[in-house]
Image 1 (cartoon, rainbow over the protein chains, first blue to last red):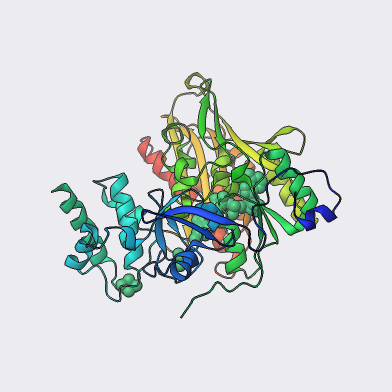
Image 2 (cartoon, rainbow over the protein chains, first blue to last red):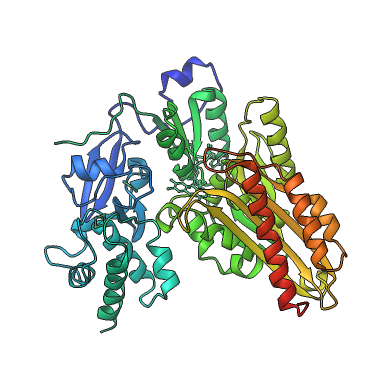
Length: 177
Length: 306
Ligand SMILES: Cc1cc2nc3c(=O)[nH]c(=O)nc-3n(C[C@H](O)[C@H](O)[C@H](O)COP(=O)(O)OP(=O)(O)OC[C@H]3O[C@@H](n4cnc5c(N)ncnc54)[C@H](O)[C@@H]3O)c2cc1C
Ligand code: FES
Ligand code: FES
């Protein structure tokens, strides 16, 4: 055990477990198909790792408390808010940000948002697209209630949601062929 | 421009190998440390309420503490404390055996938060929206106290919290291991139509903190006889509570319109709900009463009573 604070208390022995000091933690994970190994604070949030450390600025920063969905990414295929997720919670995981969705091309879900006017300023759009991707990977033919539940954590301040819902239904149709 | 995280010091993260190590760490570090599961409730405390994160996180996810939902011998549903709310949301066992809890989980946050958030964290936060639903199923909590496992009825734990809050007592260091829900076998339940209801009222339709939440189970028979009612309230910062007086009144009463009026008055009088910045205590009590009455009225209609 190496933590000074704990040792000062003269407490029973703890054999392992502190994964951090100021500099010692190495995060190993996979971001958009590339292995990443970096020294970070274990409590550093994924939002800042993506945007500031890896320059993946497609993931947007807004409320920072999990309430808007602008920072949505996939962790092992499931949507999570990058502003709620800390480095140590990403260890060994596969992270997909909006940049990783379709390599250099336009993903069919992104195309559906373009075709249906599913955005105005576009700030919420990466998060909306990621939540839609998670939904359709899990359930290719969701009903209205399932679409609404899947997107309930994504807020848009511009569109009034009509265009967004049209885009999601268009993406479902496209995937159906 | 770089958008740096605005922190001068970062918490240290501990990943204990088992529960006893986690407990020892908490014992050593005291208030400087906090147990962490999904950290989603804790984040609301640090960010929205402006409190700084403590110096140490004790990550329970590394302890081998179980996540998962099981039905044992057809009569005990166990939910590991680290089970995510997303796993609860997709559990056939929950839909089939405890639909009120499933509805409560559906109403908590949004899918992305539920992928991190755990049921144990929801309970241990003391204000989680799952609590009224767990109360009507008479759930029990299994705690690790540093040496032994203790089984405690959820209702007793909540009563203890109410008492501790009134006496400004410190929280204990126990670790929640699992939630147990006794399942009534078909032969245990008498006939009649089952009423199962969970409703959460917030300041908007979805993805909203609760102002008040109501859970109810019971039976309505064709002759209007009511039986086996369990009703619980929570939400909006209130410690979840059973409405025992109302339950006793309903037990073997016949459904009538005047009975609804009596229940309404009883709820408004007895519910322990506090006002906050957004809604008065009276608004919350009246809302709870209306939710309960409308569910009873609807069920009575389905049972052919009006
Ligand atoms: C955007 C957003 C929306 C939310 N909406 C809702 C909502 O609608 N309804 C609702 O109820 N909650 C809501 N929450 C709060 C939170 O997501 C849930 O309560 C969640 O279930 C907490 O689980 P967790 O694993 O993240 O707990 P954590 O935040 O890790 O822990 C919560 C508390 O429990 C303690 N703890 C955790 N696990 C254990 C354990 N096994 N033993 C002992 N102590 C433990 C921690 O020390 C802490 O005090 C929301 C949070 C966010 C960020
Ligand atoms: S920035 Fe993460 S949810 Fe708003
Ligand atoms: S398009 Fe502007 S916030 Fe959604």
